[in-house]
Length: 93
Image (cartoon, rainbow, N blue to C red):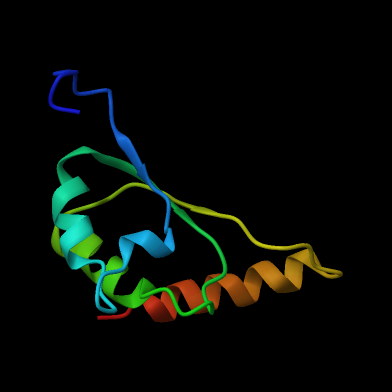
């Protein structure tokens, strides 16, 4: 990323299990934060430390998007209301 030297080039945080070291994403986040342009999240109840990730994002001034990937639902509108409520809860300080 340092080689690009262009402000429009960045990374997408992908919420992979390999980001987590001893239950925390802090070290991985510190390494990638200077280039973080977006964040891909998936199942918010899968054990990934989203509350910590969202806190780190907030503390660092991240003001961009999180992209939702979730399985199919019989009632997509209801599911997205639930997902939004869970996302807001995980973002609570």
